[in-house]
Structures are given as structure tokens and as C-alpha cells.
Length: 62
Image 1 (tube, rainbow, N blue to C red):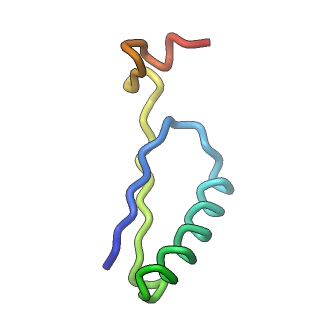
Image 2: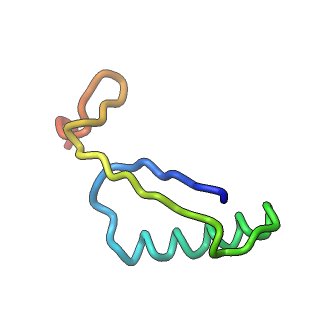
């Protein structure tokens, strides 16, 4: 049961996540030789004030 975890800043649309899940499932199943119903994609959306890059919160960037 492969699990693919995606951590990203909050704000992507459901349609973007649907498309990503569909496409990554296709590729992973081809690569891992598994059935689509055994592969899971989990999205973790992080608020901008909980993610920092180079010491700066994303919420502080314009």
C-alpha cells in the first residue's frame, strides 16, 4: 500500500489536487506495478504563517 504525502502551502484548488492525484497515481502505479486502489495520496496543507523559508514566514512575503 504505497502512500504519497504532499506537503504544500494552503490555497490550491480542489481541481488542482484532483489532477495531481490522478496523474501521480497513474505514474506511481506504472512505476511500482501496483493497482490504483492500493495507492493513497495525502495532502497536508500548511498555513502560510506556519511555513518559513530562509528565516522568513511565507505570510510575511508579498
